[in-house]
Amino acid sequence: MMMMLYSCLHSKSTQSLLFNPNDLNLPPPPPPPPTFHTFTSKSQVNRRGFSLRGIVVAGASIMPPSSFVSQPVQALERLPFKPEGYNFWIWRGHKIHYVQQGEGFPILLIHGFGASAYHWRYNIPELSKRYKVYAIDLLGFGWSDKALVDYDAVVWRDEIVDFLKEIVKEPAVVVGNSLGGFTALLTAEALPEQVIGVALLNSAGQFGSPVDETIEPEESAFQTTILKPVKDIFQRVLLGFLFWQAKQPARIVSVLKSVYKNTTNVDDYLVDSIIKPATDPNAGEVYYRLMTRFMSNQRKYTLDSVLSNLSCPLLLLWGDLDPWVGPAKAISIKEFYPKTSVVNLQAGHCPHDEVPELVNKGLIDWMSSLQFTSPVKSL
View 1: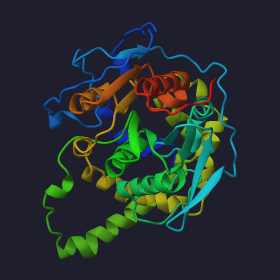
View 2: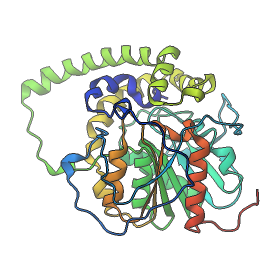
View 3: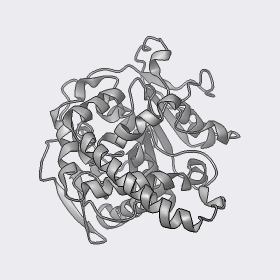
View 4: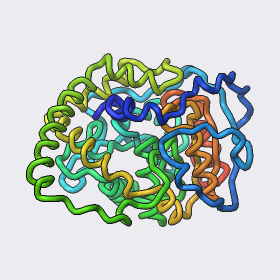
């Protein structure tokens, strides 16, 4: 819905903190067979070092992760783009859009900020040859309702928890990109009996102490009655303009190309899947609420607090050339959480759409190695 990952707003303000892959000046490595590395001891975490900075860490891993070479998609089947959507589920009075294909062990795919279920267009057809695949639109995004609620990470966690209980109804692996990755972690923490594995692709989330442990200073009467209303008016005008600007096709293409190192798949289908939800009458208000409320509250939930309560195996399928969430975070996660396997990819923020054949293979190999699946259809 709200433009690809809302980068059109916050990318400029955080530019100085981001990893620039051009600084590496390294050729891509050859494509060896994928291997998976599981770490069995928890390291001490330096919390000050973990944020969305994507700092390059050379030689910091305990064991060298596997690597793939970025390649264009070759003859992969693509999910048909349906302007009217696929399936709908009513959750708390709101229509939630989802895609369902295949038979076998269930996998639930969760998109990132500003995207939709269609962002898994090259993953759903291939994975559904082996598994029962679900891809869902989070509330406020894609073809799901643009509900006028107070958006918070807990809202999306509750949506996914209820979807697993009411629609999937059996143990599943949950896969998420960016915001969807952190939502997957929160879901696994809340529903450990049903989520038996989590795969993260360049996940959102930060390490550190929860904000609610600090005491917020009390606002003065002047701040409450004068400054806050003026600030709200200014924010509405500014964000209204930025939302209009962000949903222009040329701007969407520009943002996508900034985070896809291989831009082959930045096509009209992908752009249309982002533009269409933005035409909803409530889209602008949802954008405003996300930018002013969710963004300011996201530090309330931290990676270390969630990972400390996790018990299932974890896979990191990480685009190491991501200008927003670099390989440092993957290193930090695998050091903190013992049951972690890592596959590094020469890709940007959305490896599932940039190098889908490698993501599909990495996910299938990991699940096969952990023997998650019940008998599946032969290919």
